[in-house]
Amino acid sequence: MPLFQLDDSDLDFPEPHLALKEPNGLLAIGGEISLSRLRVAYQSGIFPWYFPNEEPLWWSPDPRAVLPAGDLHIGRSLRKFIRRQPYKITLNHAFASVIEACSVREEGTWIGSDIKAGYEALHQQGEAHSVEVWEGDELVGGLYGVNMGAVFCGESMFSRRDNASKCAFIAFYNHFLRYGGQLFDCQVLNSHTASLGASEISREHYLVALSRWKKVIIDKKCWYQQSLEL
Image (cartoon, rainbow, N blue to C red; front, top):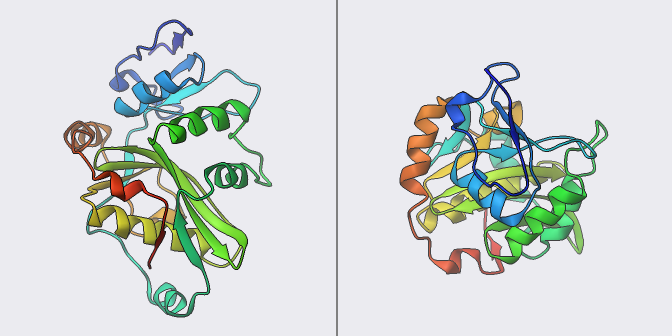
């Protein structure tokens, strides 16, 4: 199966089922990280992931990690923590700070300057959102991602205090569901999201769900700057 080469003038992607099996889901290379291209990618079940100073790589893995409405799992120890947790959680108060914090990783980061600029442009259009966790005035955790109707595609999260990113995830998940959200896209399963109830479905099933739920109109009040409750 060939790896498709994109250029800056053409926003079309190949069909996701043409992605490589190894590495799993790699579909295309190249093209700029523009507002328009990111929109097309997410509408098609595709996302970018690559290291800074490399050509963009575009992915649509099979299987896909998701957390549907009603499948959230909160373990006993996390429930105890939530009852006494000291955090304040907000929505869309500090998008640039959250994506910057997500980019700071000991193992290296895929969130370079072009990724930051692309997602901040989506944020300015009301299509990308951040959740912030505060301890006093200090930002200690959070996440960001892209919204398409009743689907939210989580991109990255960070935590500088115990369970801070999990608190962000849980508070936002419950908030999104109250406004009609149906599916949280976690992209690739890891121990962090699996502990919260995420599981894997086939790419085909994900694309069917995406096609259905991305057409749902979510009340714009869902995305207003506000505090979130756990």
